Each structure stands twice: as structure tokens, then as C-alpha cells.
Image (cartoon, rainbow, N blue to C red; front, side, top):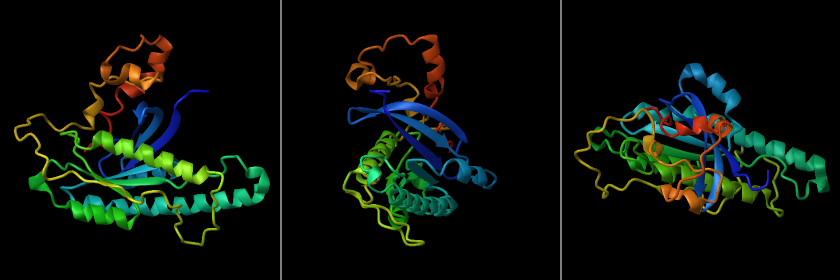
Length: 271
């Protein structure tokens, strides 16, 4: 449909997820995007289902708990599966373009490599920290990922994380589908990924930023940072951003379609 938001699928993985799926429209750099988000549980009993249903996502948000050393090592399993998926996408894209030949010109053939960002959650718990930011950053660099540190309770770097994911996906698509892009034949086990403008953007919660010391609100079961925000509909961003004006009252059908979005961000990352 002309004018409809570009769709982006995101899978959140790591220990302590909600095992839920939902969708929401977000505006980044003045452009609306329809996000389809799957929050996986990350436990052993769900991993078979995870590999079968989530590997075709555009982006992966790999979350660990900075107060739990084991939670960082848990991401190794997901990293391995994503790297295998990256190789398979490259092989399939190369094969399809060879089969189509000149007829592939101007067509979106294959899938871009998935975007990966590692996020260290609970950065507000300084006294309980056991994983330092340099350790998390080194882990992300080793796997070719972006890196963030976040706090669901203090809302540190939450919106920035998803904005970065969206921008990375857009960059990956532009690089992959540009007319002059050539997909080399991937060697077995190469883990080939096309080079983007920036390999691993790093946004880390700065120790110099003082968090409220007397904050007594209980830790939310998810990122409730959008609990009270106005939902962004598929209208121009400047009309309804930050509640400056109220959007038109949705019909009953629209309410039914948008019902999952109302609880989207409160269900993310159930640590």
C-alpha cells in the first residue's frame, strides 16, 4: 500500500524474556516504521522454537544482565545461530542472483544480513554490577555488533536502542539492494557481512550521568518507557508527536488491530 510504513522485524533474545510478540509504529528521523517485535524467553526449552521461527528477523537485540555474569555467556548460543543464518542468507542471495542473471536488475533479491546489537540491561544498579561496560563492549566488537547499556527502570538508552536498530536495518537494506551492490560467493564458514558505514556504533551509559538516588519505583517487568506515551499512528510525524495534538478517534476495527501496540513497550525485556 503506497505510503504505508516500512516494516522491520526485531527479535529480542537473552535470559529473562517474556516470550511474546507484538507490533508498534515508531517514527525515527521523521520516517514511520512498523515494528514487529518478538520477545523470546531465551531458556533451553524454547530454543528449538526460537531457531525455527525467529531467524528471518531483520534485527536481533541480544540482552544480558550486568548483574549476572552468566547472562552474557548465554548470548553465545544466539550469536552462533545468527552467524549461521547470516551465511545462509549470503549463499541463498548469491545463488538467486546467479539463477536470475540480468533479470535480477532492479529487483530486491535475497535478504540483507541481520543487524545485531548487544545491550547490557540494569545499568542503574551500579553497586550490583559484575559485568563492566568494557567487557560488554569487547564482546559486542568480537561479534561485529553494536553495543548499548540500558536501564529499564531509569529509562536510560531505551528509545536510543530501538532507534539505532531501525537505522542499522535501513542502512543494511540500502547497502544490500543498491544497484551496484555485488554479492560475492561466500566461502564456507566465512560469516560474510557487507560493510556498512559504521561497523559497531557504541553508545554506553556514561558514569558521569547521575541517576536519581532516591528513586523508589519498583522495577518494571518490562520497558514501561512508552506506557504513558501517545501511540504514533500512520499519519505525518509532526502532527501527533509527543501529544501536541490528539489523533482522530480510531474506529472499532482500528482499535482491534492496534490493541497489541498498547502494551508493546511494557512487555519488553522482562528482567
